[in-house]
Amino acid sequence: MSRTVFLLFLMMAFIASCGDSSLTRTLPNVTGTTGEVLVVMDKIMWDGSPGKAVREQVSPPLFTLPQPEPAFTLLPVNPSGFRDIYVSHRNIIQVTTDPAIQQPVVTYTRNRWAETQLVVNISGADTASLASAVRENGDAIRRSINDAERERLTSWLTNSAGKERSILNAGETSWEMALPTGWKSDFNREGIMMISLETPSTTQSVIVSVTDRNNPRIGCIELADLTQKRMSDEVRGPDGGSFMVIEQKMPVSCRSFRRYETDYIEMRGLWTLEGGFMGGPFISYAFIDSATTRAVVVTGFVYAPKEEKRELLRQVEALMYTVRKRQE
Image (cartoon, rainbow, N blue to C red; front, side, top):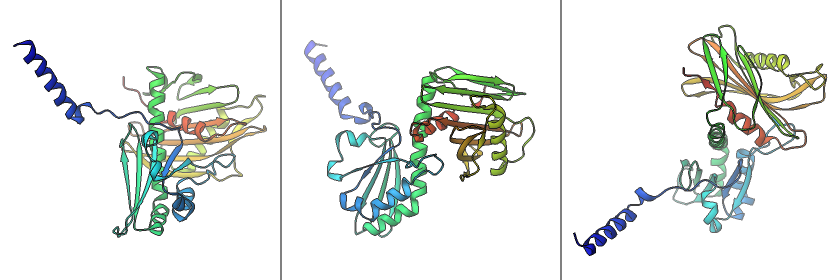
């Protein structure tokens, strides 16, 4: 083969490979800060009923935090400016109107313009139908964004931990949780362990425990009792005479859901020190280990008296979801 023919062959191969975008196209990483949601709608909609519905239904105040904080930080962007760095944002809500649409439609798309991105598209005939669609689907939209953020954080924390794991032995089984950079073990005994990340102004902690008896089922009352016992037995105040309890003066939320073929029960609320002056938010979940019928209870909490707590608690929640049965 002559040099000219060989070079022509290479050029044709290069052009052919460039023409097949499926072979060369890679998505960029998402942009934006954890907890941010880009809302693509014009100012008239944002100031009108669709924008009001998004603010009230997708990002309401979180009553399970000590001070009011919205569920997300909403960033309105006019459709004419939705380009460049905005397109790769981590969470996007797009609204579109078309008189031909008979029923409002809400769709969810992952990895549209960036890796791990979530795009929620809401389409309707007019502003009234858009607002109605947001009100009817607000919980689902909010939960989808929460799930996307948790998955990103869980992946990041797992990668940060590398092969580092905190291992809990509980009878015939053992459980593991990622131990990211900076997190340290507070204690690790048969059936219960605790890890924490401390800075000069914040403390984030996770307790993992396995009950020592069979639990055929677990509901909100049982989870509250188990969480309360772990708090009061294991977390003491600076003076040693005070201990952590669930704050009874504020409401708690409780829900059940299914994850990886397992039924979970989850509780969110506030903790305080009995005999002390500290407090903050907590989240606790439990599920039944099908092999032993024992309950696995995972509780995370935050102490940050001078800081906003929404994202600190989100990080703790993401770490809680790295708990899994250890494969020997």
